Length: 345
Image: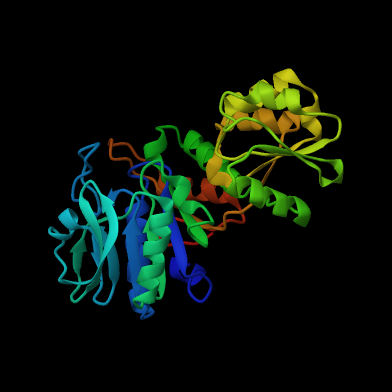
């Protein structure tokens, strides 16, 4: 299976997010670039963070370089633009600034290696992606940086590819467990009730934490964040409460405090903007599922596939075939691809 076939004629803006550095994210981006070239598709590429450098600035290990084709577009910052090897034509100098200078949008006049580093905020990333489409890119891709899974948010991209690999753990089963957990989070169901959805949209836009009772009555809580306020949320629940709209993030401590403070949580569905706002580990997630915690999201993430990297920069590796087969079994029917084997699920 070609990754580009999951995207073309379906989505315009796609993210590639890695579960950790060296999980194979850049290899995935390069694969998309190569496949797009064969289909005569022009890509626009930017990044949350920095990518395409020869050596990882954190682990000091060698990294795969980003090689773009003639006609490709990139959004990168001034200081990094200067070290790009491809011949680039500047199309726009944006007003978005970073510690490495302003963000530029450029078109490749020749193929070559580049480094990319885009804007710092989700709003600016979204706008830059749209700009590249306006300049002629058929598909715009954002390369998500370390621990910045927010690029998978539906408010930024229409679909997501998740990259994972041996770098997460020396134990293959733990890598599979963590990856399966992340895919489970990414596939949390959206709100089904249209009236609740309308109420939640307004509450989240206003950055409010609210409770929706039977009959769709709304009570706004006098707190700005759910962090550290689990017990206060629990005290606000009544027999009529049905939904809790949470602006911001949902963490383990908040749910534990709610569970320990009231039994009414079993009648509640907690609603967040999207699954990138959920910060709950695998074991805690399993516990919450058993206790009856229910989560919905306003915007559901569209996860297209998982790419896997059986090699770690620390020197250890898994059997590629075994790793692929086990990951396929656990994530079925989601496509799982080892780009070195180039085999689909």
